[in-house]
Structures are given as structure tokens and as C-alpha cells.
Image 1 (cartoon, rainbow, N blue to C red):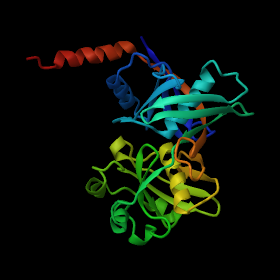
Image 2 (cartoon, helix red, strand yellow):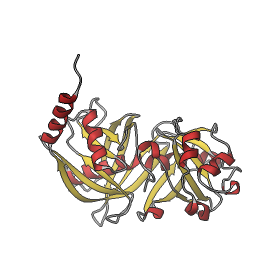
Image 3 (cartoon, rainbow, N blue to C red):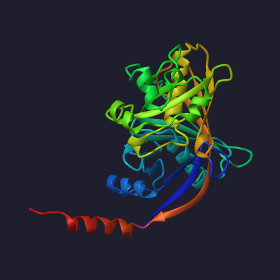
Image 4 (cartoon, one colour):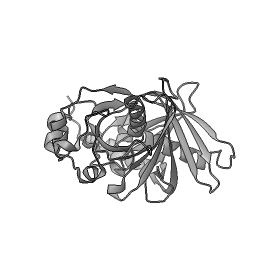
Length: 315
């Protein structure tokens, strides 16, 4: 049995922009070991696998893998997978928004896909309010982590924190975009400071509060990603974090820019409803475009298993 996949660029309306994703729309039968093997082979920031749902409220079960590990939740594969299902499933001609519920590691994730007038797709997902933990390394240590001077890191109303809507990130507010462009990850400092923490992912950002615009980068060596072009889970957490930090009482909307320093411009839209905690407190939205397709040969997976079984030691 072969396993087809579809390639999509997520958080962009332009082919070859945004964050690339491989979606396996019919993954029933694949094991966790095989999914990890495939994700490592494709070597994208994430690869998603779609299964029949395990429980009543979900429309699909979705599992997400980086080249090195499985994730309980990630925004870019959730958005991209929803667009692929809408565009290639039985709903490809639907004029009404398609409502989906993905069963992921964090629980059920509601997703809505809308077909736009230009025939492209825009998807939104709902997430819980972010948890915020200020137990992070010192300002000086975080500046060293990013190869920046101490004055580059803000510590006013915005402070560095570990923030999560399912996957934790060490978020580091910077003073301006020049520092954001100049920063690079000091791997020796990362090993000493964050490698053993849950929030090992590094997320420097610069916020324009008045315009509700944020420019960000994301480094995730623990996921096998030197830098990521668009990180939905981080964007959702960031929007919630900003709403909490600025004590915003009304609904706030943020436009988050990422990937420019990699040549893959991405735009992520986040809406935050204050004082909510459950799914719906944060909405993450973005466009996606399908750019190609392929397949993994099942016989090669079988051959891989056979070769490893033959090489195993037996008592």
C-alpha cells in the first residue's frame, strides 16, 4: 500500500512562501515509527498525518511530526491540513465554511475553512488562553543566547517568559527590528540554558502596540529546526501573552510577520478574546496554497522494517 501526500505552503497566499507542509490525508495503517521515519525523510518543519477519528466529536485525528519528534499541537500543520481536506475532500465545491474538529495531542481543536472569492482558502483554529511562566533565564543570559547586547532585550511591561497554548516557547521581547534582524542563536548558550527545558524553542519578537503588528523569528534546534518560517502555536500563544501583558479588556487582533529573514514571508492573524480560558479564547488564522503532491511507497517501509529486524540481536 502506498501513502499519498500533498504539499502546501501555509500562512501565505503565494506559492513558495510561508511554511511548507506535507499532509498525508489517508494515513490509517501507519505506525508512529513509520510516521517519524517519513517526517525525517521529507525534512520539513512539520508533517501531518490524518486518520479516522477516535472519538465522537472529532471529524479527524491528526498527528504532527517534526523531523525529530511528535508534537501535541502545532498551528501551521493544523491550518494547512484543514485547507488540504477542504480542497481535496468531498467539500471542494462547498460555498459555506467547512467546520472541522481535529483530535490532536492537546485534545480537540476546532477549525473552520472558508473558500475566498479568488478560490483560495483561509482557515482559523481555536485555542485556549496561553499559560505564562516568568521563570526563565536572566535578561543578560537571554541576550547572550541571541548574540545581542543586554539593552536589546526589553524588561518593561513586556518581559521574557515561557508561554504556551500547547507547545511552550521562550518568548523574548526585543527593543527594535534591527536587533531582530541581527540576532542569531548561540548554540553553546542554548545547550546550557534551555536544552533541558520544556520551553526550549526560542521566539524573539518586536511589537508595534499601536498598529497591532508584530515581527518575530523562531529557533527550534530541539525540533531539528534551525529556524522556522511560520509558527502557528507560537503566534497563538503570543497574541494571548500580549493581551495579558497589556491588560487589554476588549477583543484584540494582531498581525504577526515571520519568515522574512529566510526568504519565506508569512503572515499569521491572531484574535484574542480576553477573560476566556477554554477553546475560543484565541483564534489563529491564515491562508494556505497547495503546490504539489507525491507518495511514499509502502514496500519501502516494509523493506526498512525487514532490514532492521534482520540486524537486531536475538537472545
